[in-house]
Length: 294
Image (cartoon, rainbow, N blue to C red; front, side):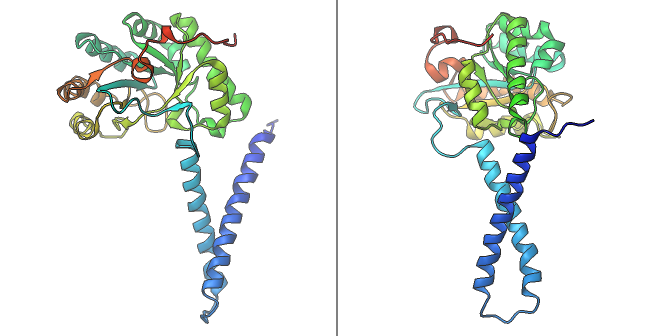
């Protein structure tokens, strides 16, 4: 027997209620505007149009909420110091043998530090890759256990996603992840409170290389970064994952473009530094210790 999650039901009811309210506002505005015109079947036309506008408005508001939030959010990092000449490179959705390992080879050969936001189930599958990331001096961040959309989850499921990945990453690598990145950049206040409790700073990005797109080429990635990168940027790559999944994607363009992207960044007089240095001017080991749940 399937158990209905009351928290999910409440969220759906609120969502549909807001769509109805917004649609009603549009309908009232339209009927008042057109009251001087004698239009046949006016309500038949305005009702579906108002509903469509309500859905589109709600979608826009929801997108702004989950990707950017509302108001001042000092606990969420999207960029470093714009005055500096420093940038950070990050990778999401790994580790994977097929793509993370050649990426590590390139980073080692070019002496470049990076941050890998890892999915817990992938760390379980490729523990040796996660361990190599740490051994070669890179930073590991938390990217949840199964790469699910956090705002759509119940509070219990959300906690499980974040805390399971935290435990697996720590146990596998011996390093506690001090940074966390929500899948697809989607978050809510529950996630923010949990991250604060766990002592994990929320880090998003200022440049996405768009390497998750189907058919993307190394040349596109290189030109895209070249046209946008500047001091303070947090650059997002992926070392696993497809468009809607956290694994199974083709990241050959990422691997093939990475060395050239690094040279492009350096040619602009920018220095690639660890994420902690970009955000705080200090390595993670220098952070104040916090009480972290077992």
